[in-house]
Length: 430
Ligand code: ATP
Ligand code: MG
Image (cartoon, rainbow, N blue to C red; front, side):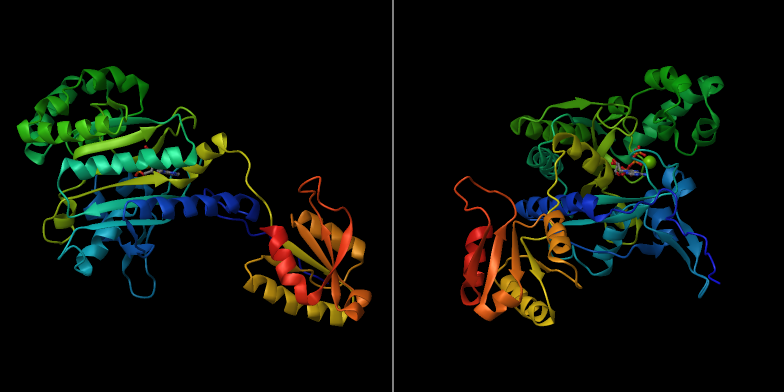
């Protein structure tokens, strides 16, 4: 008697990318690597697991992420408190401190990979999602803030994405935020009646975040609140103007959004988001800003830094709206064969084809010619190469074009000597 086991499914909010969809992921990753190289940013990889205190300290105790979104657990083997990274920046900064990376020169680095947040799954919001994370460490001026934004604009144009808008704000420096914060708390106290539970809880601990609410009943109160922008001193304003001037040089249109605070505590001066109305409720594709205090906060020598992260699922969703087709070809050449010696010969020939840069599948197992041709066709191959007893005896293979590339292409099959096969196929698939 066979026992039926219950099916094991993926964890809610964590998605598989099957081969058909993964094509686009790889295409995006290729584009990202080339785009990063164009600006001299180098790849870096940090662990998915970090000590929980890196994030509580780095991201801030009173943030959505740390309060309710982190996958944290105690390592049963040694009692350490660990967290699946909910974002890249803290880990990237930890690694650069640990390995003295910015000791002798500034670093332009990037990473791509999964991050984890325990949120309610919906379109554009998952529990395992992926980010492209870009950081410039050790650089202080508005020139690098602008470079970051201009860089993102280039990615949009590389991918043919149009309807994204840039929103910009300045969070000033901590003394400016402290003055604004005092005024803001007075405002919140005066409007206590409209604050929801989160608002009441955060009004003294993180009043700026109270304004970032999505609660419609609190919008009027938030709109009327004192604006941080009005509390900026001369230097902060000059930095912001410096960013704006460079964006104008690059022809980038932006909107100043004085209410933007971003979801993490570590930002100062420039913050920005790229938003779109093409993704439903999850409108932000990219968010970033300057975080001059973070490196010191996680134990490094004080150094300025700026960075951003792009949500890859949201980006893929958006990109797909401009470029719906993706190639689904498995190989250039598909080998069809009959008999063991033909199969073995095909396997050897296929290696020579791969040496020549031709991607090749050799039909696995047996099967009638008809069944094998059907597989050849669904593989998307341009050419089927047939090896049977007749062909082997003649020292040749039959070559069949599976896609009519041009009207001048001869129909049907033609025999090609095995000595010539690689050169012949190379000419055909290029
Ligand atoms: P949101 O306001 O949408 O929650 P956030 O401010 O929490 O975004 P960041 O921490 O700035 O987001 O992360 C950078 C980017 O990662 C976002 O702009 C978005 O594109 C993407 N992102 C954030 N959370 C998720 C999620 N749960 N699922 C998919 N993508 C996400
Ligand atoms: Mg969030």
